Image: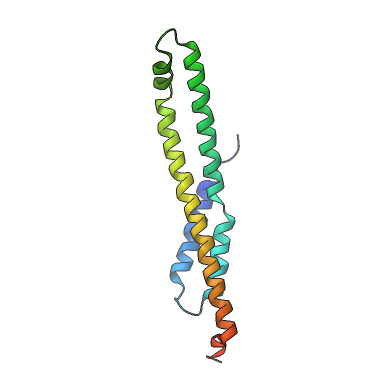
Length: 130
C-alpha cells in the first residue's frame, strides 16, 4: 500500500499560504510567483481526482455484483448495496472539484502576477525606487 502523502502536502500548502499572507501587497510579485509556483507543484488536485475515480470504479463494481446476485428487485438491491459508496464518491468528487479549482485559481494568479511584472518592466515602474 502506498503512503498517503496528502497530509504532508497539505501542511506544505498551509506553510506557503502563511508566507504569502506575510508578504506586502506591492513590489513582491516575484516572491509571490515563486511561492505560488511551489504550491502548484504539490498537485493535490490530481491526487483527489484519482481517489474519486477509484471510488467511482468500486461503486460500479459493487452495483454490478449486487445486481447479478439479486433474485428479484435487482435494481433496488443494487442501489441499496452502493449507498455508502455513493456518499464516499460524493465527498471524493467535492474534494476533486475543490482542489481542481484551487489549482486553476493559483495558475491564474501566477499568470496575472507575471503580467504585472512584465508591464512594470516595460514601463520602467520597477526602477522608480532606484
